[in-house]
Amino acid sequence: MAASSAPALVDARLQPAHRATAAAFISSGLAFASWASRIPQVRDQLHLGAADLGLVLLAIAAGSVLALPLSGPVIARWGTRRTTAAMAALLGVSLAGVAVGSAIGVAPLVVALFLMGFANGAWDVGMNVHGADVEQRLERAVMPRYHAGYSVGTVAGALVGTAMVALRVPVLVHLLVVGVLIAVVVPLCVQRFLPHEPHPHAAHEGGATRRSLAAWAEPRTLLIGLFVLAFAFTEGSANDWLSVAVIDGHGAPAAVGTLAFAVFLGAMTTARWFGTALLDRFGRVPVVRGLAVVAVGGLLLFVFAPGVPLAVAGALLWGAGASLGFPVGMSAGSDDPARAAVRVSVISSIGYCAFLGGPPLIGLLGQHVTVLHALTAVVVLLGVAAAIASALRPPAPAA
Image 1: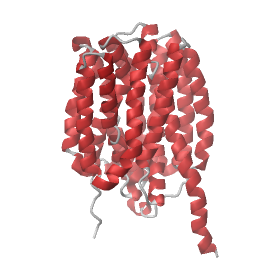
Image 2: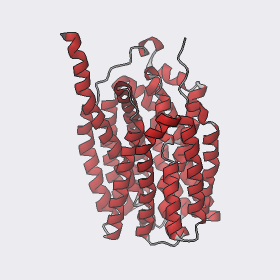
Image 3: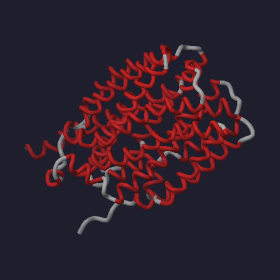
Image 4: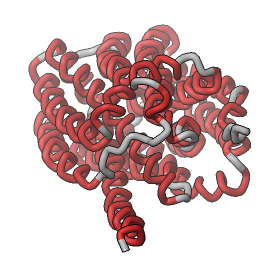
């Protein structure tokens, strides 16, 4: 009787945990896009040039890059539930700090963005590791749809941001409300995460810190990290610069720039939701290589389009092409559940270097060739991603 009730107990926990994971991804996307949708207004309020804005955005990446290597050992010790709840609360508080900083000066804005990046990085690893755990227990692919949930959140955040711009709602009011909601709601949602239970094989592989260091020496993990970096740069360039490029490069009104960002996010969401079928039919490698080609085509159309409508069409293709790189990389890093936490931490750490180097790189290039044309740098990294995509294949079972 006890033996038969155990699977039922696991199943009873699994569906609420599945829904809570989706809620965490959606909320994360909503929080980030709320900030990203108001970047042009923050720039104008603080009178920042392209290079200055790039350096300010660097604070987010710096916080994330600091948090990511620490996330694996922390999650291994404290579990995904506690880690994700704490980081969501911190992100909500820091988003409120961003709202205040945007009104009073660059220094408090940079501090708040650093804390937001730190919270976002650890939250990202926590929910991805938990999502991989749920995926393994469900015995079906769900990670791309979790990331589609993230994209749903970003679309919602971008559309709300568009409405806030059109209605002339101050950045301070908009971001303060979103920050309070995130800090209160998300920690309550993640209480339905699966309880922290170390993988049975992990006990034979030493402490969490030792396993984390060992993961940095694994060639496949490092290649997956580089692959994720390329797609993170592709996605992050749009998050930080797409609206600015439409406004400054194509001469569109501010609301149209934010709407173009929403189109990018909508395309990414749709491709993530339906991309699971492509992955099941064709496999990881052919799909991500094909999407890299789509992203390159979309980027070039966006940059060199003779008018705003074609530029928006390019943003759509750019978003679709960038869609599956990050979730497929997370799934590949979690192929072995025993080392999922530390490997996802390493892969995320490498990937988020794109957010560290991307904003200032595009900003500095933009000072010489305009932000719009600086975005062509993304094409180089997409070529690298296509070349090393074979690392995403699941490893052969050990004899």
